[in-house]
Length: 199
Image (cartoon, rainbow, N blue to C red; front, side, top):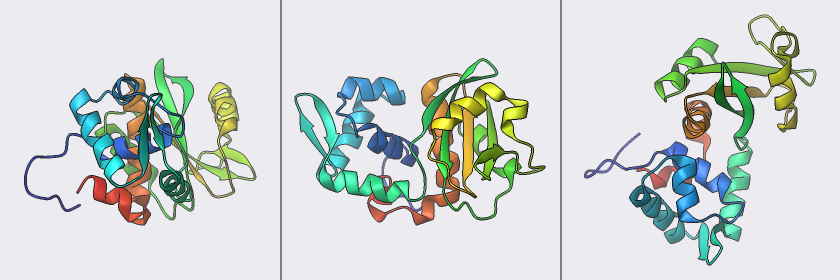
């Protein structure tokens, strides 16, 4: 990724994608700051960028997506779903999302990426015949971790999708590490507006 000269951005692409999904419901700046574990200044800068691109509007109820922002989230959703909380794994808060048409991937490489981005662990699953299974041996998740399998039922699953589950010592870190794995796989395919936020 090419960075402009000057100060390193105070937020990441993961923050930007998480925020766009979150702003489908009007949200105040303080809530955003807590949700993403980002300083108020970083949140202000990120919101300002989204405002200048016409992706969000600012109202008394907080910030919300504009029509243009909603359309952008729709385009992101063609590649990755919104990350959702899925209870806990190993006693830590966990998030899961779906990556569409993931192509070839190495589970160990994706797990390493998640851990590099503050996750304590990650689970990579594929959808086969409507069920989440381990890609290595096709074993259904429901046999190994029935509770987690139930939590994943709310995700928009299609045949061949990759399910990314990450857990960390805070919900924000679990959330952002899940997005990190998705962006590691799909970052190049995301709309230009997203990429421009952190250049």
